[in-house]
Each structure stands twice: as C-alpha cells, then as structure tokens.
Image (cartoon, rainbow, N blue to C red; front, side, top):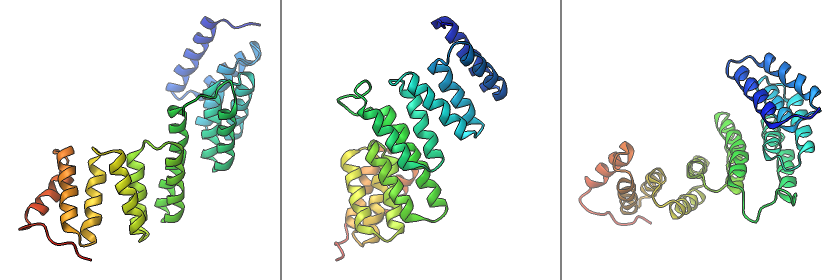
Length: 244
C-alpha cells in the first residue's frame, strides 16, 4: 500500500507527540504498525530507530537505521543516526567507516564539506573525550579531541579544552601551539586568549600575558575572568622582561 505525504506527516506528528510525553512504547507500536502496513517507508524506520535509541535498545535502533538507509541511500539523517549510535556504543572505527561510505556515495557527495553532518559526528568524539577526562585518562581524551577537530574544525571551545588537557599532561609547547592556532582562527575568542595569557604568565613571560589579557578584555569586556586578569596586569609597574 502506498503512503502519501500527508499520511506520512500525520503519522510522524503523532509519533513525535508520544515521544515528547515519554510514551515510547506507544510510539514504537504506532511506527511498527505503519511500517508493516506501508512496506517500510524509510522515514518511519528512521524514527522507529530513534525511539529504540531513546530506550537504549541500540541493536534494534541500528537495524532500523540500516534499513532506512537501504530504502533510501541518500537519506542523510538515517546514516547519521547510525553513525551516532555506533559512537554511543564505542564503535568509533565502524562509525567512521559508515560516514566515509556516505561521503563516497555519488548521490550524497558534495564538493565541499557538509558542516551539519561533520559537526554532529565530531560531537560524539567530544563526548568521548570528556568522558575520558572524568576518568583522568588524559592521553585518550587528547586523542578524541583531535579526532573531533579533524572532522569539524569550527569548535574553539574544543580546541581550548584540548590545549588545557595538553597543559595538564605537561606538554606546554603543544598546548601553546594549539592556543596560538586558536587565536589565529578565532581572533575574537576571549577564553582562548585568557588561557594563552596564563600559559605565558606561567612561563615567566608576563608582558606577553598582559597583551593576551588585553586582547581578551577588548573582545569581551563583560567577561569576569578577563577583567580579573586585566586588573592583575594593570597592577604591574611596567611590562616585565621576558624570562628565558
């Protein structure tokens, strides 16, 4: 039986209403019923996968996402949901392979990067890195943050987190390299300039620290951290010499 767009929209709306009220079993029953009735429309299969995912039924979710993708090879949301679910399970290599297959598909490939897809996939690596930080597994966290930035580079907060983690590992030169690259890419990002100033200050380069904090304060005068360090720097009689 064929499913027209109006009927599809009505089913999807009803399923989303169930989900908003945490009635996942009702949403599951509705979607399964209509998948059988209408010969597995990819949009319904994808949403059924989302329902399974929200209930932590990950194998069932992946099965539905794969079926939705097979039913419509250019259905980006289904393949992205599959990649995210694989990442949730820690299957990062497989998630990357799935995403790379999508990029190689001439029906979905683009001449430029697809930031929305890259951003969501990169976030899975960011979350993994943050989990490693909580476990004090700093090297593993660095690895995940670098993977995230390789996929999607427009995340200054993640690059700053990478620099902080490198500092905690004692890798000061690498941290400095990240912070300088961060300022080069995002010259108005005050938090990065604040931390760059701290790095300079810890290295005895107080005059460079002061200049970094001045840039941070100029970019965000309302930032209390930038203001605090500016007051510290202004208390110095003059720019101290570079300590080598």
